[in-house]
Image (cartoon, rainbow, N blue to C red; front, side, top):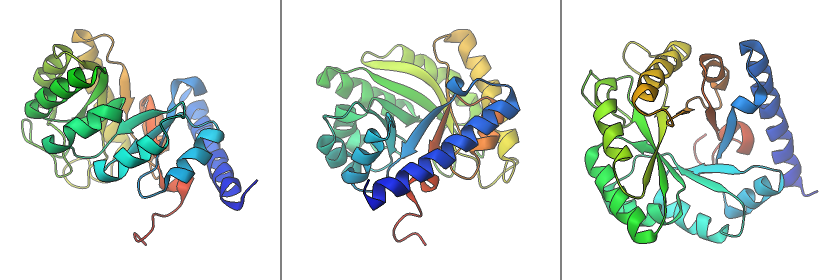
Length: 239
């Protein structure tokens, strides 16, 4: 085993232990939570190692890095998630490789994604990114639609060709009433998910929690956690 593979295997095992312990503490089955490894800033070679170690879900947040990486790993049995703020001029590229876009937060983006998914002959899963630091109908500091805008956007996704409404995503906010209260933020997202599923029963995915707060997300009921640093290490150049 190479040194890097050993390092990643050890990190994955520790993250797996954390998820399993969080599930046990919450009275949930381990199978209810899916790990998505965020591979941004790391090379395609690491993605290959992760795939060899059993990882099947990976995420990226910048198209200029994700597109060539996805192409280099096209032979691997992976589901690619796009989790960054997405500009409409990048949609054609992203729709070519992303299986799920977790950062859908405005109608213009939905329209563009639908057009390009149809053009590519693909179905792209969509999560509505919820901004818990926004006013009732505003936008968040790191993207996302306010809770009051979820219903209209969800209906638009559900009715758009080439798109599939999968659920909701959030990032724990740095400002506002939920700042420093990750558990409360994730519980709020679960309440919003319950509301969404009344109109769209198949939209069961709830993506919340990262390396520092995955336990709070699992306790709240998240179905997917997005973990980067805890698996791959501190990102180059980020200290």
